[in-house]
Image (cartoon, rainbow, N blue to C red; front, side, top):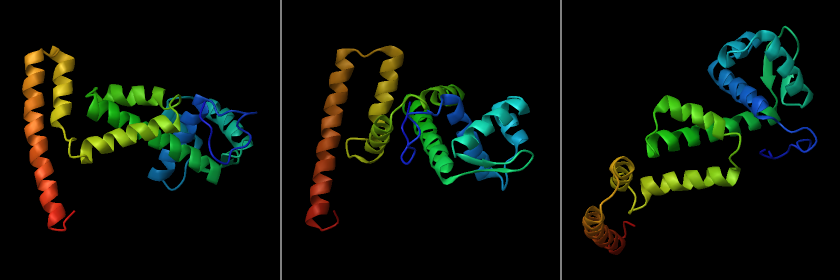
Length: 188
């Protein structure tokens, strides 16, 4: 169970994965529409309206939404923070699964939804750092990810590893020379 900043009542009344799903759905609907209604949530989560109404009462009691029966609802500041956090975790996990591990997008989205409830903020931060490293570090880039995906499909004979290590060493040495040149020229 994730602990959210500013939510002192979490230990007594934890936010369940189902509540997180509702908060994420409300957060996303609020980004798409001016106002969120019970039927919008029911449609998005594919549940019946009375089920939504019961959950909204719980979320309201926790101070996560402002809700009056038969009215529009809004996330409170705390609810918005939690919804935003859940949304970001979902996006990061889905991106990692789909773009890095090359999992089918729909499967990655489904798995990210399951994983987002169990992954700690420090693990999410590590995912973000890893993805930034891949994109921005001179050793990064996509070629080694392509090799990783090839390895997952075909395995990796040692002769191919040696060949790729030599190619990488040559590319890396060229990159070092370019960066040293940029440093001397004051561009780095």
